[in-house]
Amino acid sequence: MTGKPNSDDPNITPQTLKPSIAEKVLQLCKHGYVFYDQGDIKSALRQFYMAWNLLPKPQTDWQESGWVLTALGDSYFAKGDYKNGKQALISALHCPLANGNPIIHLRLGQCHFELQELSAAKQQFREVIAHGSLDLLNKEDPKYLDLMNS
Image (cartoon, rainbow, N blue to C red; front, top):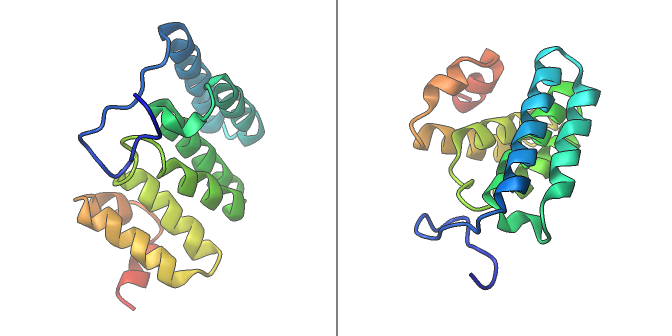
C-alpha cells in the first residue's frame, strides 16, 4: 500500500504489522489496562507509550495505532489531563478504521467538555449517538448528556 490510508474510507484495508510486533503491542496494551483498572495511570501510560514506540513510522498508518492512541487518551482523561487526552484522541481518529468509533468520540467529547469547549463536545457526543451508541453516553456522568439537551 502506498501513501497514508484514509481513516474515513471503510473500504481501505490498513497495513498489516509483522505478527511479532502486533503481539508485543497487544501485550503491552493488555498490561497497560491492568494498571489502568488498578488506578495506576502512570504505569498504564508507560505501557501504552512503549506500545506506541514499537509501531513503525508513520505510526498513524497502522490500525493498532488507533488502539494505542485511544488507550492513551482514555488514560489521560482518567488522570484529569484533558488537553493531552484530547490530542491523543484527535490523533486516534486519523488512524485506519478509527473514525466513527463511538468510544473515541465519547472520550474526545468528554475531554472537550472538561476543557469548556462545549460546541466541540456536543459534536463528538452527536457522533456517539449517530453511531448507535447512546447507551455509552447514558453510562457516563449525566452532565454530558445534559449538554445535549441545553
